[in-house]
Image 1: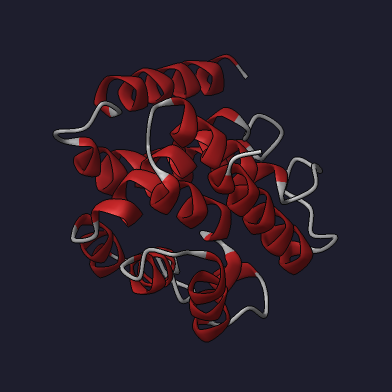
Image 2: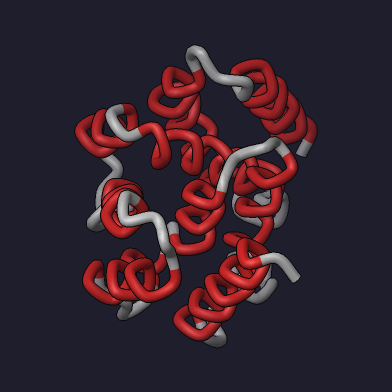
Length: 175
């Protein structure tokens, strides 16, 4: 097994331990979400920095994990010293602190790792929200059009994001 694969497996274990028995809104174990986001990034050729950020992207927001614990994990597991700050910094940028305001999305726009992880995170969330209330879905779709679609400019995700949004809107109109 390559060293990079071993590091990713250790990151999955760290995130799984921290998310514990949390469930997603659709009832699946929460860890399935960061794993899916990380897997999508890996399949598209994004490197270790993006993959680990994806695995850790909800730790500060949804668990008792601290920035310092993520930083320590990176220092212990990753040989590249630039990752020791870039990953925890990107995770911190992705943490809403309870509100998704324009400043939150501006911070994401200023951090390329956070931006790409947020786009894949949002794409996955849009594909897994079918069982949620129509009101919640409409609000989420509106927020995506307003704040997330502008983040797709200059990325490979622009067309995919708008296609999924149109599909979700059409599905809501048939419900």
